[in-house]
Picture (cartoon, rainbow, N blue to C red):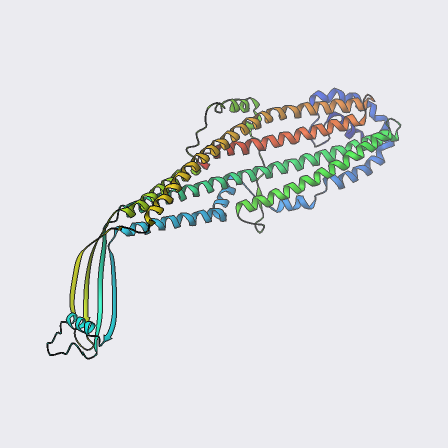
Amino acid sequence: MGIERKLRWIAGAEISDRPIPARSLPLYRRWRSRWGIFARASGARAGLVFAVFLALGFAPSGDLRAQSALRPLSLEEAIRVALDQSPDLETAEHRTNAAHAAIDQAEAAFYPQLRMSGGYAATDDPVQAFMMTLMQRDFDFAVNFNHPSTTDNLNLRFKAIYSIYNGGRDRAGREAALATSEAQQQQFAAVQNALVLEVTRAFHTIRKARRLVEVERAAMASMEANLEVAQSRFEQGLALKSDVLDADVRLAEAREREVRARTALARSNTLFRSVLGVGEGEPVTASEAVDDPELDDLAEQAAAADALQDAAQPLDVSRRPEWQAAQSAVEALEQQQRVAFGGYLPRVDAFANYDLNSGLGDGFEDSWIAGVNIEVDLFDGFLTHSRVHEARARVLESRAWLRRILLDLQAEARQAELGVREAAARLATSTRSVAQAEESLEIAKERYAGGLALMTQVLDAESALSAARQRSIAARADYRIMRASLDWALGRPWADWQ
């Protein structure tokens, strides 16, 4: 390790090309002269270690090349892709279309029914032959109706039926279909909101995983620098062999964590593409994160947490599409109960027939009939009673289920609210802990360079800094996810989500 790099290691600027912190400049200048005596002895060895350092820590890996080949999407672009490609949303859309078709079926009961039928028959039955002759208006007293010859008839009939009253079943059936359609539309909105939430979660999970990979790579590079410093001091008789071994063990652990972080990033990308509905054939990923002043302002985060509804107040979930869909489903069952009750009431239908009858080879003769039918079930084996009893039980079941839905939605909203508060508090705490861990690491390195501390203390400080950075990254991503979860839980339109 070169003198300059050793001094930057002590000053806490070894991870990147960032300038040495102002508070560390006196330390940097003081130790620069002390490390000068070791320059010649360690120069060649440092060059070799530096080459290994580049090969292990900064050589472009296959994962980095694979990541660079992915097409980045902003959150808005990812949402648009998911809304266009998701099979879940397509399934919900088809269910909504089926519910609309059910409305048309219910509406058909309010229109007259027109039918046409036709047929041909031949007989020597006296009664049938007599009726065919009359319908053809070809009656002749000279015919022996006890032994008629073969008589045939070609009939063409036009029939019209119109339901005047059927106990309110048609109207109740239409209302039930309308309520079912409304429920399906709300279910479609619920699937859409849930999809947007999943896209948002997967999007920020990728960003979090990507930042964690950077942290682990930085930690690995720092551990390599620690090993190099320990090895150099051991060869100069200024450190124990245990310092070298401890640094080597911590480096191995850092490399293992870096591998796990890269694997987590790859899994996050796979899940992201699955949520979007594009599969592995479309190389897309989340765009790079940018600095957000809102998240960096800890005071604003604390204010945002305090501005949330008080835990003693019930949260309003009336805008949740799941709640509105449940209410519409209960209404549909109530209308079905009215349909069943209509079996006790009379049915009144108007009808009209227009017939054309002809024997083969003869002209057609027409006739018509029109009237009104009234029908009442005096006894149907308790069929209507059983149907009403079943429908009433289903309504009572749905009302209990509706209460359960309300409790579940309120619990989801409360959990989301608490999650936002927790994430905001974690963000403020973790941001401060990163600054404190960086200062603690600088002190530990200064003490170790002066022979006042062990290498294990430096390594512990390095691990604490990596853990603090990981918590800060996780809190930042979790805050965004929980804000979206709260908007989802309160039923806000996804276009208005923060």
